[in-house]
Length: 318
Length: 318
Image (cartoon, rainbow over all chains, first blue to last red; front, side, top):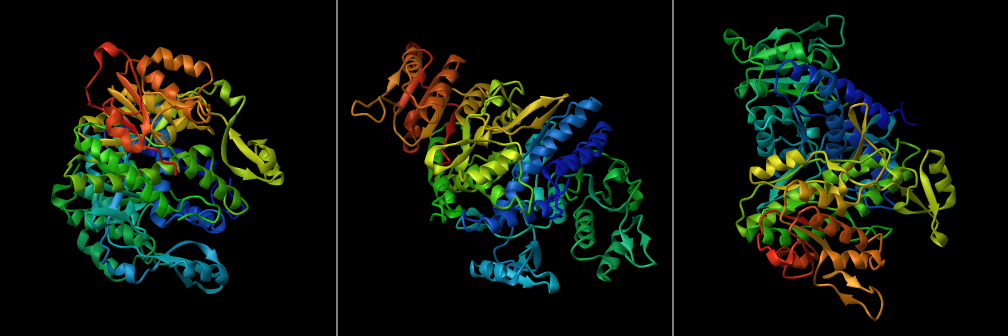
């Protein structure tokens, strides 16, 4: 179920989300109250391609619109899949999806030096055409050119109060998809900007806002590894913020993949969260309980067993 | 601010929504509690074009996904614009956007005979290619071929309870965009289907669900007209359900434009709503109060002056 260029078809994306939501439903069936966020990288990549291939006919939409588009589609798929998984398990929790904006600072240095690659590789001629429209592109070796955008710091999940209201009424709420739609303050109003917000950092911010006990980041591997990709690779199980911070500072975690997840976990516990876990989707139940995956806790002596309000982060990537 | 083919650019769409939200903010500033819905026809048209022009590279997404995409983008634009208009007026109401599905019957006869045109005109060769992928297309005279889809009856706004919860907490809620994402029940779960739901009929259904006193349908003209487009054209002001129903039965209102709006107004009052109004965006305040536009009321003797919970329907079309 892949497209001409190997990307996941709509059916494949739906099946992947159905699989993920079974694990989330298990967690809710076990008594956890859950807020969900999700990524959107491959989906935004597809939208950018469509923008580019249709630009001679319909006006391309900016990157914040692409993010908003994926909140709608992935949100809808999660709604259907999670409700279906709840029905099988006899779980009565309602589910809602909130379109979510994330505040960034228009003066964030990231805007002056866009470095986050988005979308696919294009020939130089296409890149030149889009650069003439104001975009930043970078030559990425033999594979061609790739668009780069700013990835500013998330400062506030603007629509988090709506998430609070729905959670207080018993909803499982899906929000901050793709890190949230980036907005800046501009003359007293908010305005979308062309940027991408790291989804893990946004999830950590949301988790702190809603007072989550645990932040669970689901990814492709069971554990964060030291010396990843070498024969000396070793999994990190239960660890301390101090040790994890030291490993991060030593450059153990790749900036485009595990780095932001470790950063998000550290920010969550530094901000007062009890426990952050990074593990594979299949293990999120045990990870939320501190029994599987890479676990970092604020205070080992209090070894939290509370399971209210963990925040799950299933990976929407295939 | 139009594209190569004349469609509105993202900036033009944003400006149009900013203009519309000033009128909605006036209504809220005057004391009304408002739930908003919106159309998405031109935006879905653009997404279908992109689907088609990029189909050789990335898999086209189905029509329900296109609808979900527009709930994200238009929702985000409404959030920013309405909050901005509130700030200028000193209105403190929070605003939220809920991704919304609308239930339809998989056995609806509309699925057997798709008649609702979507997207633009294409040459026969393109139409044949998409028909081979299972789509229905129809030859639309000299302008070429056009895709047609089912427009089944909306049965239930699935995510309306989340709208209730947020409205009870004082939110202005944007939902049921584009009529809602069409879903059918399939083995106990909901599944998106390729269809479009009439946005006015969905708005009437939502308005009844939330117990709105008034349904306000904003369109391009101040009044519904009899003998529209002829020298004998005359505006309809205050009228009765009986008279409006008679005019509709006599074919006075075009099926693709004013017909569904009149139908939605009639359904709303027949279902117990106090007042439905059809008027231009500039007049929605007076229309909600029964003082402008085409007004149909359930019971003239009770001439409602309640202004709680009107449901506004700004037209997202340019």
